[in-house]
Image (tube, rainbow, N blue to C red; front, side, top):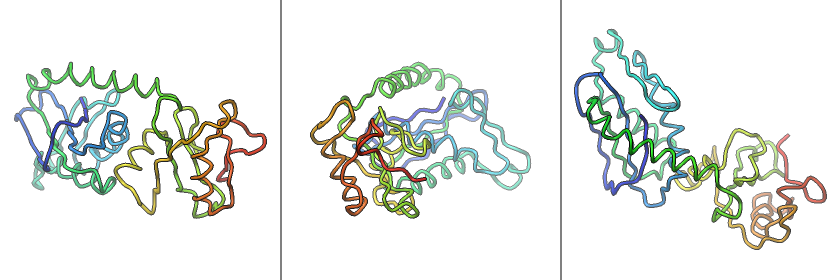
Length: 239
């Protein structure tokens, strides 16, 4: 099971509990107060990638959760210890999200402890999925802006909401939210929160805050955008 939550963490901790690989759980707890359930989705996506970075260490996933952990004899001979896996997670999460704050990262190898956490993690993930699936433009406090394509498309400034995917289709809104809150100012993945402002046209999806942010981000090249209509003032494109 892989779970991420916020639980009063004040400093970085790396913990290995248990010795036998009879069951495995990796738990990352975040102490940054800006982290909510939605943000953890974006962070977890990075976690599931970096746990495979160590040569000779195989972490198998089933349904987005850790199922098993295998360490090769070569890795053992070269001195691999479980703490190294946690250190890789710690370093890579901080490389990706420089404002992530304190982290408690636990590798649980005790089947009793894993079973204790199982129900809580399952409930957390189910509730989190319901929040993601049920989100709408009306239910979120802000939208999410991405400028990854600005280097080659100067008139493009992507605005993403639960009801409007990113132009490239590769950056869902929950990933952009995590990026905006935990890695602000990243020159390679520049994401920001966009205040919605006044809803000018609910049918076409025009918001005063989106217009303002688009004008600022395109340096005045585009001053008005419809999120849900290609007629009149269509959303900008990177192609």
